[in-house]
Amino acid sequence: MSSIQDKLDRVRVAIEAIETGGQSVSYEGRSVNKADLKTLYEREAYLEQRLARQQRGGGIRTRGGSPL
Image (cartoon, rainbow, N blue to C red; front, side):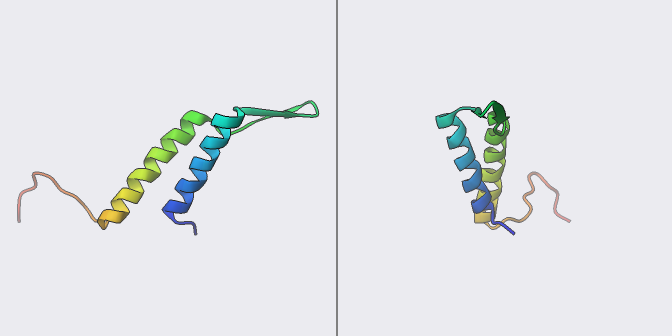
């Protein structure tokens, strides 16, 4: 199983590939679209949040709860 950091690194590589090489590739009359850039940005943000939570020690946060 990949770590969150590994997943984040792969997403960033995919984003860079699209930003530097374009959204689609054509070769010998065939066209292939890479992953949607908007979706990759959303995935990057999600993984960044998970990584930050993991680095803080995870756990459950509560606000304004009443003690029992």
